[in-house]
Image (cartoon, rainbow, N blue to C red; front, side):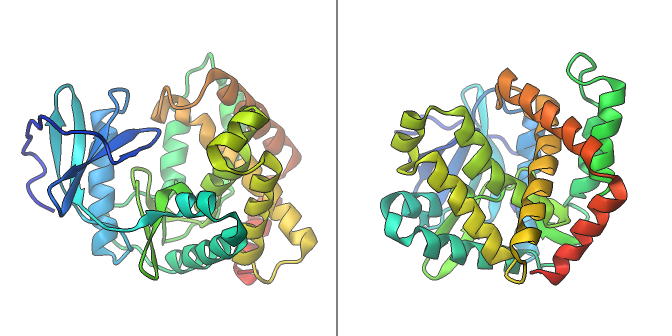
Length: 308
């Protein structure tokens, strides 16, 4: 990583070569890209992504290295190594007959990802970070009593020192030759693999549920039912030793922990999720915390290791 405190002003960037929910990507010469964040993304979050990405790169996680923070007008971005390859989401869109094969390949890659031990102090503990943000929730959105219930969900998650992307879905993965590599490491760290299954649930089940059937079909080349089925296939391949009953329980846990995690977006990433989404995840998180005793959840999650 080069000098991260040196700021540059980029002009005449041309058209972006990619767009996401938080940033646009521009080509800078032949071997670099500028990931230029939208104005609502805080400078602190951009700095976190730079630190996390470089720490992951040094830990042999398959990611492109990052060089420095740069400025373009009133926006900030990251100057990064450019990698050739195509988005896994794009492959899924263009080759529907290969969806199951592609999602199986991704599940295998994510299992490998979760075997990478993390010792670098530059990567945060996903569980402890979540608990920290519980204390930052707006009291009008989440009362102290409700925050305590949501906190209990995170406290029940077992400790772990493995790499977790924390926004791990097919839109943040791309295929380079025979390898699957990862993008967008703003939230990455160390922790239990459940933190990576949440994003797959959001990508294929939660977010599609807030789109009209027609809009989602146009955007993804899948129906909402097909998308949820693809998430189910991912779980089956990831938990290769789990039976139908276990998979159903795992899916319930993922849905509940996902709801708790998205509650935190109201302070971590304001503006990314709609008010309707935030109210719905709060309802789901509270419902989950009341239905599952902390010890039961802990036992179930620890048992996952025997199902992978």
